[in-house]
Length: 162
Image (cartoon, rainbow, N blue to C red; front, side):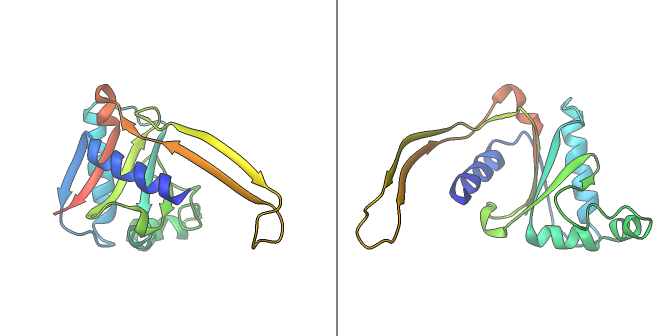
């Protein structure tokens, strides 16, 4: 649900413990920035396994055009170019719409288990005879939140554009 995802990205970016600030990224600098944020996380003793790289579409386009990624594709490793199944520097790559990301955040790397993201479906009803609609209408109310755990905040890495 986009509203929940937007909220989570905002909370993750605000609570990140591994933050690197720098200039706007280009296709020549995006891989170095990912490796730099990953290095900050590793210095915070965050394991390399179970990391996910969330990139907005603009950054993702630069990433797949980066010279090193294009060289990998030519060598036969095309997973990164074709979608979210790819890996960069040990991170699973997940492209998301630009509008879901906080302002001036180029990407977020998150280790599994560093945040708590509860979702609770409070009310859920199916209205079979809703006026103005052909067919049933589903009504619901969802409560959600997101927290970066203080003890594990190094497990959330962010590249912020200065």
